Length: 338
Ligand code: KG4
Ligand code: ZN
Picture (cartoon, rainbow, N blue to C red):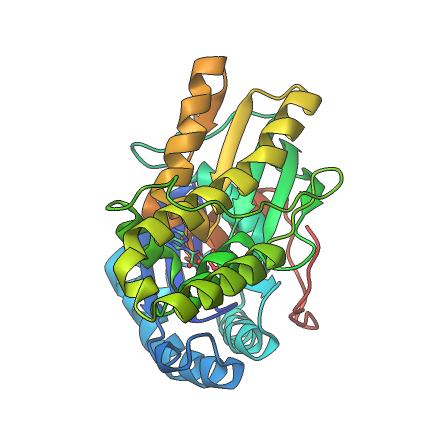
């Protein structure tokens, strides 16, 4: 008998079909099938995402079990993302998880995707920093930008969030204006390395409290590009690295300002990054610079920042310990407050 539960976790909230097997907080396998079908549309097409999840889920789960060398009869529980996310995509993961839990007669655990991004930091692996409570987390993903105070595994308080676009959405939508493929965030990050961050200045919107607004920046960049392209039709091609570096600098500084203000006001010195945009090299670097002011910074390795099922598994592990199981009547939900 193992000391820790073996949990199969399934993540299908957006355009990645993912499955992972965890033994306690240790990841035995972490399989992700990223859907390429959306690239030609410059964004995720929900109906195509659901169909691709249906095609991918069986092979992805098989691969996760095989890589972990775990037979399904050894599993202690099945976890799945209940929300937030695209409802059609969530339904595929939830339906699969329910059927498997029912067939194996083992508990079912539902997980909040945003909580899971934060809890990715608790994965037991060499090089992971595993934050101490209480801490403040900046979750920056394609669909959300949130500042969350975390006092324990069950005490999470949302202090601020975006009122329109998320930080990742800002990267993706502005990248589309620059002609970059979807998702544009990693491309902007790469191209920015050759550019000057102070080449162009864009207006940063500010909100009351710890809230965010990124849609004004997108409009500002669009108007700027239109003006410049009227003067020089090759403006984007000739200035791409400088544009990427300047836009990245603006999004990074807009993301960090309310977060660092909240940390000061809350008197919290343990700061954590989570979500897909925490893969951004400039954001990581700028946050790490805060260590000189006495902050302890935790940033997950790249494989646990963008959507993955290991983060669902580690969150489910804590729920398993608390015996927080769910019944078969559970339904996914596109909005799921933290
Ligand atoms: O957390 P995630 O995988 O999915 C959601 O839950 O939304 O985040 C995806 C987002 C996309 O917007 C993508 O462009 C962004 O994360 N992203 C990045 C980088 N890597 C991923 N943004 C900026 N720089 C990166 N290196
Ligand atoms: Zn996510």
